[in-house]
Length: 310
Image (cartoon, rainbow, N blue to C red; front, side, top):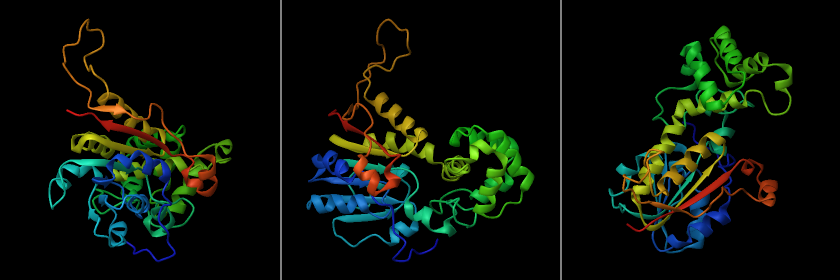
């Protein structure tokens, strides 16, 4: 992985004020920042709550190597889906007072061409958030069957022209760089689809999600996170597209539901109790003022839940 230079800034943290407000009940305890990145949220939380302690987790070696030295902050290399192997070990508590997940790709990853995330700058087809990813974007683009490419573009990109784009990719293989892939996609879609947002946007999103197994990680992390929240603990998640947010919403609502029986049963037979209370009934969005300062915040949505005492 490339080492970032001082001018390669990390992700400007999104909805910092809201994050601080919702995690204030954890001010004297432990929080997991499961997507540490450049540490913007963690820095803000530590600045506001001097007695707070944070376990930062990131699969990107760049992020871990750049973590600031602070005795209240402990940054480890790992995937946020692996909370079971992180919490309760190495001096970390098994139960925490807060969990923060800021999903998606970081600005740093987008802005370093050699990481291969951007369709605007030429770079290798990589897109791995960390070395734990099982394959690169190049392996998917150049080795996947036509059928697998169509499935990836439809499922993870919700791409209307998935079949046309996949066929074009297969016809143009081998494809070596991000700009080659972007141009291939642009030529595959109708002219009308090339106006407005970049025509390769959904394709790059889909391949990135497939490379990093992002959606499966979210499901595992939320389930594991609920188990590691102490009574009254807060779970804050920021998502950046509908696929992520759909998973978060469904998981929170399911954990906040009393009965989980199959629909149609006359009485409840499962005996389930809710694990969470929804703090935000609807997803929150950044203010217009924040979006004006940080345009990458425009697609963010935040959901918050609280662990119910057992």
